[in-house]
Image 1 (tube, rainbow, N blue to C red):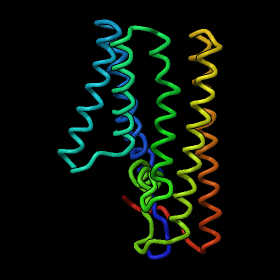
Image 2 (image 1 turned 45 degrees about the vertical axis):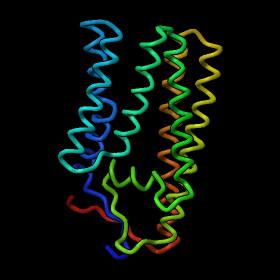
Image 3 (image 1 turned 60 degrees about the vertical axis):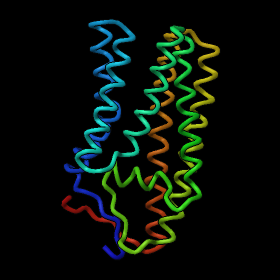
Image 4 (image 1 turned 90 degrees about the horizontal axis):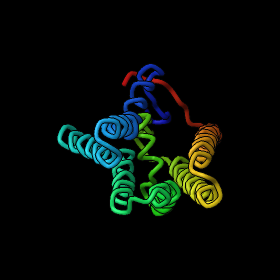
Length: 212
């Protein structure tokens, strides 16, 4: 552990990451879709919001903490639901897409230069990445830089989605914004992984899979 990063074996990693994504996105979306189908759009939004906050409460009771990804999902969904219900305007409802990315940009940027950059926390919570027992300055600088990278990605997404919202009809906006989001997120993840690999080699650090 002194000179290695550790991550669960691939099968465990898939389960850990999958459950994190299900908690923060899958369950709320499923509740939203089911509630909207049964009782209408507003009921669906409230159902999705209720599920994400109930999940956060259960996490807090069982483990004493709530994953950062789940907290961000709860905050963004709360904002989305409030805007959608109190305005009833579709374009204002869609505005949460760029606004949410701008909020994430600010959140990431606020932690990037500090002692606990949010990318390090997300790596530990989402993929169960364990750093060496002795803090390594090179790794800390990487996580700070990676947090700035993701702040820039979310800022770019906010700008792109705002331009699309202003120029495209709703159907085209939803399609193009989904594609743009997926492309930028995948590109950011790939760049972060390659960057981490370079940092590990530069500092002579190892990487291994372990049993969680």
